[in-house]
Image 1 (cartoon, helix red, strand yellow):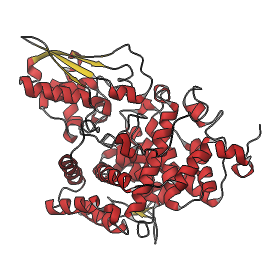
Image 2: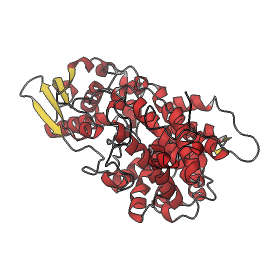
Image 3: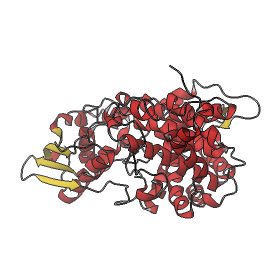
Image 4: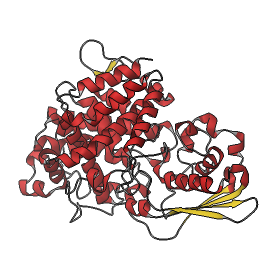
Length: 473
């Protein structure tokens, strides 16, 4: 079987290929002020949860495997005072960005779009020579490629067992790095073709450290793909079509880019926008949590007052919720029964809800079996269908009548958005977790500086000040 290099492919065929379509967009896409405005809080949010994630045990374990880079060069760590090779830095930042499962979501492709893309960029871009606008443009372009590629394959990709953030994230990271590195169209085509063979990640690892490591691998591999392409490594023009990426990762259902699916018209980051998380756990738990907390406020019922609970979800809504009886904080990120029980017991859900100690409380463990979770039987194919479908929670009290609450709007979505004050509170919470001695006025100054990043001639100053604040402990 022969493999056709992009440099030897028929120009007319290459122009029509998905690889060529994506590469042309990456190189030529214009990113207007409205998109930059939407990208700014996305960068703030993602960077905040990344900084907080750097103190987690899994990330600390990863750090012990990395060799600091001696001498000049290397990418500075936010947490250790060391510098690392760019691919190792992408691995580290990527794992930290996702380890708390607090980063944003796009239900268009059932993925976390910003974490792998921003992580790769932070490890790749020359901070001294990269403007805030250039960073935001690359975030918008990389996430656009990631999300639209997921839309092209549909929900089938996810149901086959792939972790879409990891697989799609590798392509999105490569696209973002190609943009920030200024690769031409031919080089960008090669970068995307290389990334298509580096994409990996299985959903079965949800609830373990490997889930967040997937994002680090995606960021690192996406960056490697761009660097390899820049050095002259070539891929095939058919990396995504025929028997390529689309076919392989959709289980044979999609063989070419769907008619009518555009890129950047509009950018997904602006319309419909990303869902920014209000709670640090799997996004398909958020409607459950909203319902439970609302019922607790309205009725005054606590865990002791409830005999049992029923959670009704859309078809496909429980796919990632693979730990009904969690034995660790990581397990609990993907546990519907735990979300119900913890919400009733504590009256709130936050970062402290997902420590091992909180999950292993004897009164919590004893009540997990009292929560039943069911899916409806309506066909659901796309992630957007799951995201738009209502979720209902019914509580059966020890005495009295049952009470129910149905949530339709996704918390943190454009229909129920994270407000500026909520984003600021999340920023403070995350940065204080990363560096407990950061003064409040420093937190505010860094937040306000980040809100104006689009006008910054260089990202080095802001990122440097963040590093100093976080590593001061």
